[in-house]
Image (cartoon, rainbow, N blue to C red; front, side, top):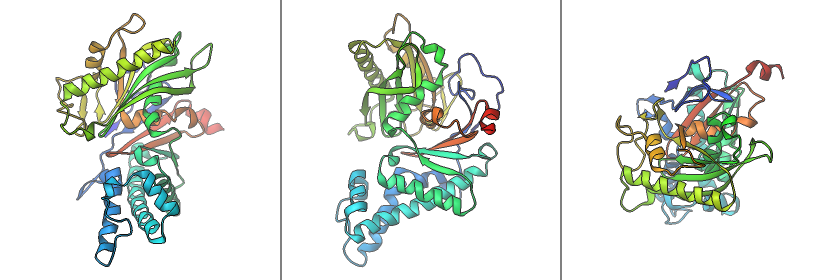
Length: 362
């Protein structure tokens, strides 16, 4: 786990920095374990599908499976939502049972996090990731929140505000001070995950000055590398990301946007100040992303064309941190808050807002 204690913010944050323009990143990438391994693995998309399959297997021993023959990992979130809302009683009950067990696991993990020194006094946790983009996910979040409150934890769990496909792109705006974007109205962003890579064109709000709070993703492209028949090599993955970003550069030009020479990147793992990945990159496509000889920000900077006459500044942080940062403008009513991202794994980060005393006085 990365714990942070820096006191003074640099003029420009570095890769994996603790001090960012609006928050201090108190900790991220907590790797909680028990005798069975990483407990975060029990609250991932894969874990939810596993719980659903376990319930179906129990029922098959005594009759028909209410959900039919489709494998649990092939049932879409949209289908599960429909079964929950409109399905026959037993169909809905199977989905609801998986939600309940998942919520119990997630609540257990949150309790463990809250016992960590870096997570004490957390007032709110926003929950993002792919599972959040469904009614099933929203109910799991809500049920987890109730379980924690019933235990006496005065903490709110709420779904992340933006669509999961966009939160990890919008958060890139908060990696650098807003003065960097003066004279520009858009940036490039990349969100790398264990199953997908997203690249996007993020437009800032405001006509005379950039307004980060009003930013929106005006174009994005998704690459599901986990679905490739032949796993891509690391260099191929980098080339694919560069190609996606070049499309976004073209889109900015065609839309008449003044693109800043800046690329924000969210990537799994513990991000070192030089832009390398110390650990946690095992699910990334095609090779050893943790090699000391590999540096993704440098690779992108060297391969991308100049933007507005300048080589792009590429700034990278942990993907859960970046997704959480998308909530930064909307979490100013609390001093300490965190994020959980339910995806290929369970990402996590804890933040303290700057000007904490002002927050406490409200």
